[in-house]
Image (tube, rainbow, N blue to C red; front, side, top):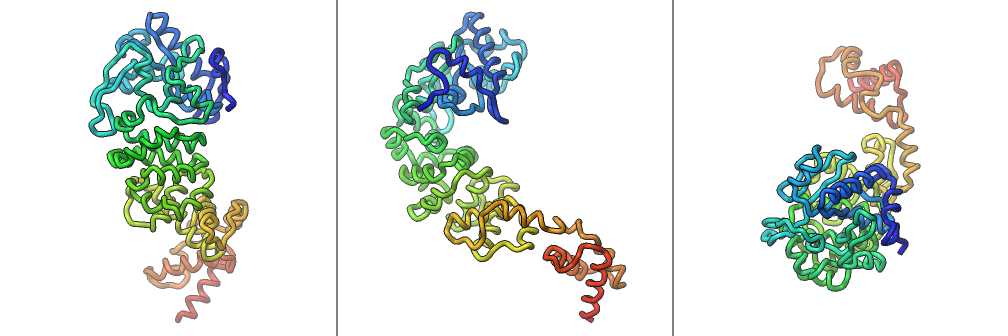
Length: 420
C-alpha cells in the first residue's frame, strides 16, 4: 500500500494535505500541532489522534483532527483562554484559538457498557497507551507526537499496510462495550476495501444480536456512509455473513443471497437516499419509517421509487420528467437497470435533456391562471377550474399547446363549449 507519509517526517506530509470541501486543510493541522506544542510547553503530554491520522496514512482526505492529552479539562482551559465545553462530561474541550478550532480530550479509560452503547463512566488516566487501548480498531489507535513521529502500540500502521481491520485487544470485549463497532467495521471495510481480520469477524458473528441495542439514528449514520462508499455490495455481503442483517429492520429481507448481485451493481451514488430507496424496494416496500428518515429523505425515496416503477415499464415521458425531480429520474433509471428490469435508459445526459426541453417547470409558469378561466367562460369557480388547469398544464408540457394566453384561451373555450 502507498502510504501518505512514513513514520518520521509524517508531519510534513500532513501539513501538505489540502482539502476539498469538508476535508482538512493545512491550517487545521497547523492549529492541532500548535495546540500539542503549547500543551507540551506547559508540561503535559499531548498528541494528535483519531481518524485524521488513519486517513492520512492511507492517503485519503481527512474530515476531523483531534488532540488527546494528559492534561485535565480545567488545565486545558487554563492554557487556552478561548474554549467551549463541547463534551466536558467525557473530558472534551473545544479549543477555539488558535483557529480553526480543535477538540482536545483528556486521556481516559471507560467503565462497563451495560447498554452496549455508551460507557457507564469514564476515568481520566495519564497513560497514552491506556487511552488508545479503549479504541475500536488498531488503525484508529495511532497517535502523532509533536515531532511528527508515530506512537503505535497496537501496530495499526502495519494493519493499514496489510489492508486489515483488527479490533484493539480482545474483539469480544470491544463489541460488548459498544455494539455499533461491529457496523463500523463493516463501514470501514466498505470505505477501504480492507479485509476484516478473522478473529474480529468471528466476534461480530457472536455478538451480532446486540446490534439491536443500538439506536436507529446511529445505525442510519453508518449506513449513510456505506451507501456512498462505492462498496455497498461488500458491506451487504459482510452483514449477511456475520448475521448483522438478521437483526436490523428491512435488512433481514433485503440482504439475502438473491439480492447480493443487485447490491454489487450499486456503485457510488452521490446521494444516500438511493441506498434507502433500493433497501425499501428489496424489502418489499413495507409501511413505516424504521430508520427515521427525514421528511425530505422520505420524499426523495418516494420519488425515486415512482421513477423506478415507471422505468421498469416504459421510457420516461415528458409528463414523467415534469412531475418528478431530475435526480429521482436518474436514480430510478439506475435502479431499473441494476435490477435488470429496465425499459428506460440510465444515461443521465438524456434525462437531463428531456427535463430541459420542457416548456414549463411548474403550474405557476403557465401564461394564465384560474381566474382567467372563470373570466373567459363566465362560470362560477369550483372543482372544474382545477381540472381544466391540469388539462392545460398537460397539453402545454406535452407540446400540444403553446404557452401563450391567446392559444390557451382558444383551446380552453373550444373545449369547454364542446362539454356543453
